[in-house]
Length: 429
Ligand SMILES: Cc1ncc(COP(=O)(O)O)c(C=O)c1O
Image 1 (tube, rainbow, N blue to C red):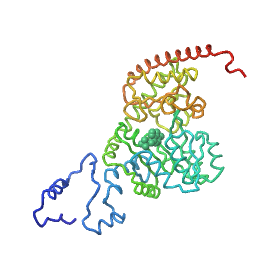
Image 2 (image 1 turned 90 degrees about the vertical axis):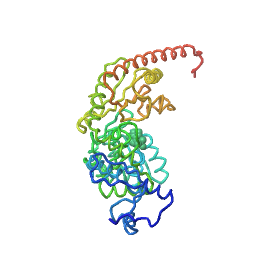
Image 3 (image 1 turned 120 degrees about the horizontal axis):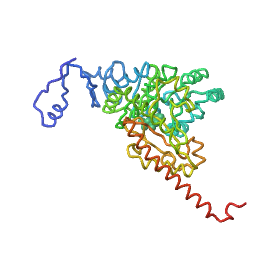
Image 4 (image 1 turned 180 degrees about the horizontal axis):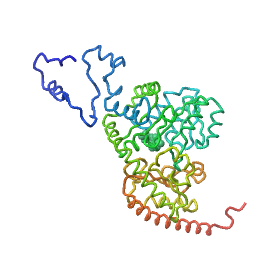
């Protein structure tokens, strides 16, 4: 390391201000929290060193879009926790999904994707990659025979699934899907966001790339966006190149927040899961609740897969309010409006409990037939259970269920009144 150059002559105020305000301190002791390297540029000693760092011939930092020490620390942590050789972090989960797909797909390729897929991922695949000549087919990824048939049907580059997904907390068998994909010459890419590496490490059971929206459980506090991809050194080098080329780099402060979240991830997940299981069991006994979807319940369609694959469940559950479609839709809206603790918003994996009623929010424009096709009952509520006290949540859900039952009865009564008022000739023929 050469010494910083000494100025030759006194200088003006601005020159002195810039230099005085950016003179980084020397710290010989290792800090016990990862510093936020809030710097876009890193100076080299000379032009040759800068050239070598920028072209990757020498390790180091030059420009923060290419690499930043806080982000690199997070990427290494992700690799370790996913059981992968390497990791790469992004400005959001969608940026990570885009880079993972972009790193392996080209025009003419085919993707077979799970039907129970996050809406924005479906749009990315169909509208964006579709426009570039990628063919996308959907399959029920819980039905291994159907996946086998889909892969056998035509050459496939990527099988894309989510470990746990909407709307009914669908669980797939990652190891079995990896074996199937590889038998047909396809890669398996897994969005592991709902599970987190605490519950499932897709790379360890054969997946080629594992994606997390770090915005959810790993960040955990609803205060930062982020995404990650983990895999082999060779595959992540390709993913990293997309990150650099598209500028989807994670900001250092966001990386710091996610590192802080990761430190408490396992204990948060255990608490999310315990409270979700208690809520699910309690909901199963309540009048006006038709069905409860939680992997710990033996009634869950993939209970056996979840029990084999995960040490415990996550904080995600769903339940369906009883009644005719009209009554159930009204009940769902009333339930959401009556809640006093859960937030009415659209994310998951946070300290806050978040309850969503897709038929009156994200899927409001769907009619009953479209909702049924998407596997969404008119009274379906999705719940990301937070870290509040279980007894408080149960009490809040109990009073919201009272409101839901009253709304369902009112909707039924007004529907009946409308039917009686109808002139006899309507509907004839
Ligand atoms: C399963 C899943 N994957 C990816 C994403 C996208 O993550 P982000 O919002 O961080 O881009 C989400 C967001 O809700 C999600 O639920």
